[in-house]
Image (cartoon, rainbow, N blue to C red; front, side, top):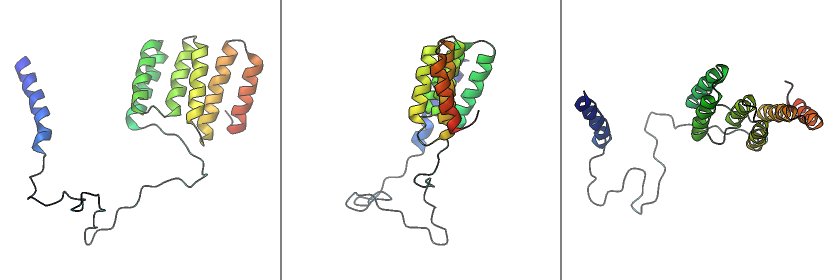
Length: 175
């Protein structure tokens, strides 16, 4: 059994080596490079449309944060864990998601919610501020971060500051 597993691992490790290109004749630059070694744009293939440039939001246009497929699956798993009271496991799952998308404010908000459920309001507030810093231009994520900050302030009895945070959240997007 162990031999079979080891064989499969070795085969899987060796597969990328099979995908190498044949050596080029001497003096031939690699595809996409000029003889001087500088990158050159690839010529379009006749009869094929040129690829469209990546879509960029218009300057000053509102931005909206999204989770990638892997991070979204991890958030779903973390919510299930937190729903079952497994806050430590939920936090660990969200930290895995943050290793994939460290600049995503939505993940920081999720982790802050878990920390708040663990009665760690100070850390939840800090994560709300981190999310706020990352959510530039995204009113929805900023509002969610302010709601997290407000909830963490309420949990610590800092109601006037919490009301101010709720006001900021409401100005960005109603709850």
